[in-house]
Every structure is written in C-alpha cells, then in structure tokens.
Image (cartoon, rainbow, N blue to C red):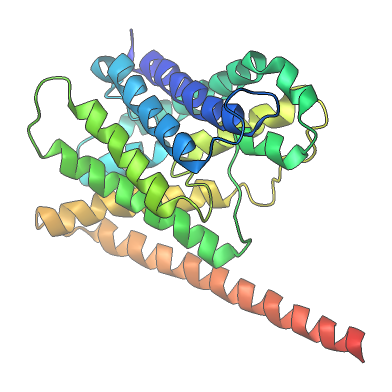
Length: 276
C-alpha cells in the first residue's frame, strides 16, 4: 500500500467510525438514539485509534491536513508530500461519509430535522460567533498537534501508541468539543460536507457553506502553530515561521472579532430603529 492510498483508506475509516457514531446517536429509530455526547467522543477517539492501527505503517496515519501541516512545520514531514497527503485525506473523507450515508439509508427518511442530518456529516457552532468559533477550532487543533508530538516523544509498549492518540481525541472532545463540535480536522469537516451536498439525502436542507470555512481555517492555523510552538518551546528552535504564523493568526482572529463587533452594533441599531 502506498502512503497516498494509506491516507485515503485511513481517513475513510476515520469518517466511517466518526460520522457513524454521530448518525447512530442522532438519527431516529437507531438503537443508539439519544445516547449522548460521551458516546460520540468515545466513538471518534476509538475511530482514530483503529484508523491509525490500520494504516500507520504505510503513511504514518496523519488522517488530518492540520496534523500534516503541523508535522511539516515541526520539521518531521517533508513539505513536498504535503499536497498529496491533503488530497488523499479529502478523498478518503468523502468516501467515508458516503459509506456512512449508505449504512444508515432508511434512517434519513425517519429523521425529519435537516440540521440533525447535516450534523452527521459536518460540524456547527453551539452559539454562532465567528471569533469564538474560529478560536475554539484553533485551540482544539493546537492541543491536538502539541499532544501528538508530546505522545511521540514518549516510549510506549509496542502497539500502544495509537490507543493513546485515541484517548487524546476523547480528551479534546470531552473538554473542548461542546462549542463547535471539535472538527479539529479540515478534511473531517469539508469532505463530509461536500458529500452531504452531493448525496440524495431526503429532506437534507442546506450544507451551511457560510460556516464551512471556520472548521477549515481554524484547524489549519491551530495545527500549523502547534507544530511551530512545539519546535520553539519543547526543542528551543524558534523559526521565522513561528512569528509569521502567530502574526497571521492574530490578524485573522482580530478581523473576526471586529466583524462580530460590527455585526452586534448593527443589530443593536436595527433593534433601536424597530422599537422607535
């Protein structure tokens, strides 16, 4: 198996487990219906572990463009392979989401809420707020990449490493995931969102493209800075990239904050106009 195919297969498996547990918990007439957030976080975490076990020997099992970027910025992965890895991850995510759709085929008819159907495939904010949503995805992915690099710096019994990585995903989901659904992976959100848009899901509604850039950009920035931060703080090698990505992130977050402030002010003005 080539590294490219390994990333396709591994990411597809990840989405089958991850989108699968979201479908299992949220689609009507599933025996797991309403079993809750803890089940979802464990489903994603164990899904990551199983996917890493499956393809780690072939590709290193990044399964996430943010991880690929973080490793490249940290110096552990060649930049020349970054584009093909991200392409493979996107293809795998679309395939995994399509298989999940087929697995739960009769349950789409049984479930009426289009938001629930979209939630099987893609993330969304608990409270829509561009700055906070972007920051949440940044922080979650930053923790992911720093956590992965920290795990990699330790020695485990043979074969245990992927299981520990799975618990890192569970920890992020339980502690930080409730704000945006913790995409922490551009391919995990964008690939299934594309599948949602293309698949003939009955009563599916919109794919919420207006939000779709946040679980792509937030994790990309968080993963990149996570790799640079680990290199700077844990190994003492501060690069130009560290400052460039930090300034870029602050600029983007600042623009998001100002956008939210402007929106809030315009809403207040509109409310006052209506009242008068």
